[in-house]
Length: 206
Image (cartoon, rainbow, N blue to C red):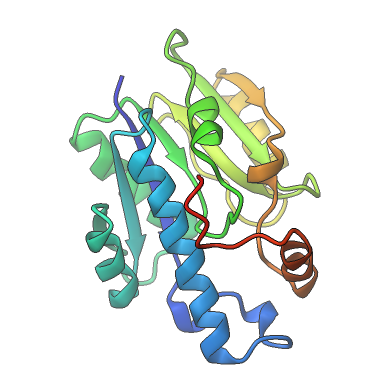
């Protein structure tokens, strides 16, 4: 089994705009980069992921991806998030991927065990595994096996939309609640929660 991870990344100048009320631009960009590098560091050492694809229009983020031994792919012009992930999925399939884990780059608590658990479906043929955000509205992680059988539904109410897509495609559906994966950094309140955990993004224990 050859599992690949896909990490879509916005242009850094437009990332985490909701944090602009509490962070200066330089601090916000530093946070985005730190979160991104930490995510790649987890994916780089986990046994269940053969390779990671980073897809973005941001040249600096693609350079960082290459330095972290990920496969950097430039996102097509005028594509949205779902079409960008689909683009990366086609590339992964061409390299022999048999399972795709889609992850955002803003999960500060992501661990090796989390990734192994999210991809532990070797004996099943057609599955969709979803980890929702902690509000039960968005999708914080998605594992698809085999890759390419469904249309990605990221966006407003993506959790419900992905469940419907699994039902439409008659795939076995797994909904898992991993606290580390459900917690992302999107708002000032998320940032406050992270600071209260006394957690460092540079912590080597992943």
